Image (cartoon, rainbow, N blue to C red; front, side, top):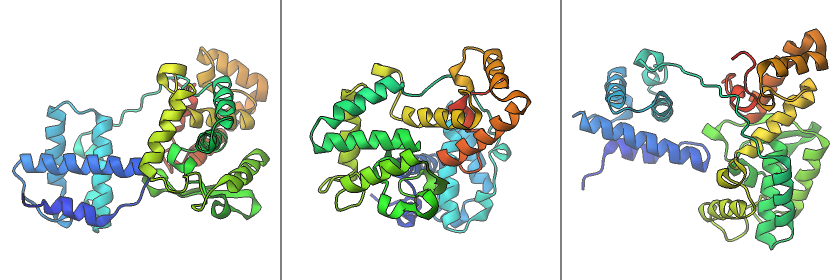
Length: 311
């Protein structure tokens, strides 16, 4: 079967990003190219893709019932690849220009892993074999730093912790976007613990393991100790939510909106804690959450962690 030159171009590009990001990019690119071909387009170079191609694909996707979020994710991968090949026309094309609405859903739902579940899981894994202990440490990193799974097992303390108590999260990040922020004593102590435990790779992937196999093992062990939607109502990602809630409380002196049953209860608590300055502190905390969670300039993402008292 003849190779598709657009897919060949994608494979040669070797775009940056975490394991999950690369998987998502491949899914998005394959769907885009497949739709182009079904529409009778035989374009062969990413430099020749133009806005009309995107518009036709989006129209087809809309007719197939794809959600706005799914289309945005697919197009983000297309833009990234076109950017790699210098196709600025596609990079600069916005979702609004393609007729995709910008919808932000805030459910004010608490998606964090409860502390008692987290503490029990870590204690249980600490009593297991070396690989299980490594999984426990990965959970500690995710909960203490607010990192994604891949960022957690790829933390390399010897290289990632710099002077002035700064950490740079650059391995396994979403979209290849690194971030740097100041860490506290608890985070520094955990970094030393990880540094001592780490193997030849300097991180929490055991020697002799492929990343894919290790990732699957981590998920399996996590489920075995009660981490998952079915057992505790939160996924591994819930460790990040828990840390962002904690960060918000450290700054504002009050728990975030998702911890309250109503907006009025939250506002009353915030005013009691900080008085007339509570909204300024809320804004500062929201920016810090966006920074430490690694969402770049997408300042609305923080509502997915903290909830919103405006809605």
